Image 1 (cartoon, rainbow, N blue to C red):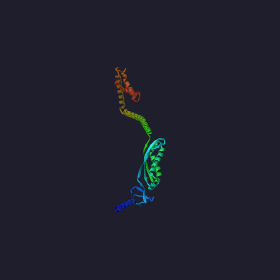
Image 2: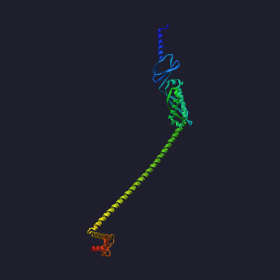
Image 3: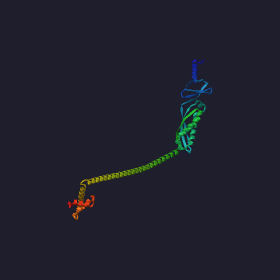
Image 4: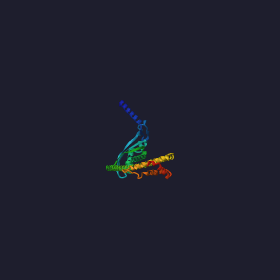
Length: 320
């Protein structure tokens, strides 16, 4: 006979197995495909679910999170027949668990292979220099192609990023030499542009200085001319005023006699200074004619001609 304890243990194991087969707990951000008698029955959502043992089975388990997938490195040939070793990272997310289960036998391999073939196609349309400049275009082209094909696989391709673009060593050395030459060329151009700008600045400065100097000289000449004109005008006005004063004095009572006396004094003084101007003493040949000389000088300022001269001679007779 079979021991009752063994039977109890067997029954316990069977019950535990049935419970395990019946009760399913789906984690968050996961989706399980349930098949009943070999056919698709439904998608189990996160949480506790009861299934029929030996009738239902979990056929596929999918993660609904964003998944990074490393695309293996491969050799691509550019438009100018240059080899490039390219690798990248693909980010995708399962959006339809049913299609991901039955749309393809292995959607991970399908996405990887399609990413590699699309990458080779895009790189083949670009020249070597453009491949380094057009990374965004390459990434966008791969994502567009993958997303269109992956719709039947229940997968959404979010983005693709190129990690490395590695040309052969010979090409890399040539590119470095080209970059060095380009930098030297830019340095020479920058130096020449600096010298050119320096000459332009110096010429502009000299021109501005000359203009400022000429403007200053012009303004100085104008100011000097205006000053001289003002001085001449002031002297003329002073002379005019002095002449008016003299005329008024002459017309007054005793004015003419004062003028005659003043002229006579200046004449005598001038003659005396002339006589003392050298080592030789100048004496008039006829001192008696001194009065006639004075009378002639007075005749200049006296109206009336000869009569004025005679009167002047009479006034200066005491000088003989």
